[in-house]
Image (cartoon, rainbow, N blue to C red):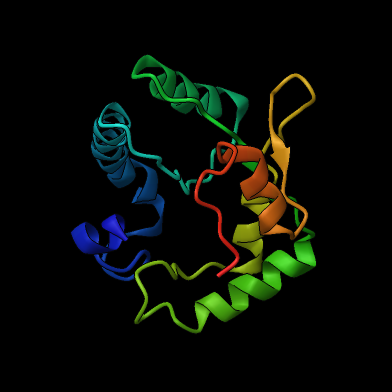
Length: 147
């Protein structure tokens, strides 16, 4: 959303090869806000690719520096499901800031860069049951309600 706000449509308002360069200062701003929120006692969900153990480790270290307790939740999915979701998202690419147009070749190229969490990297595997995840990450009696 912030990329869209600052730069417009990826591949339309700025060249496709410039995404990471334009994203870098935004991620620094997000990291500052992330720290501030954690320091003020808020729970924070970081919805970002976190493609490598190193990147995940950097965000976890940032959280721990300010007293946060990071929890990595891994959402494995097949190529077919990811591609189906991206096709639906692509239909909204001109009206939704979260809908960057992405080709199947983009998906395949990016999928090769992702390193899933290993057994050495503490994580929770999401298997389609949000209540189970909430029970694992929320303190006992911590506000998880069925209504």
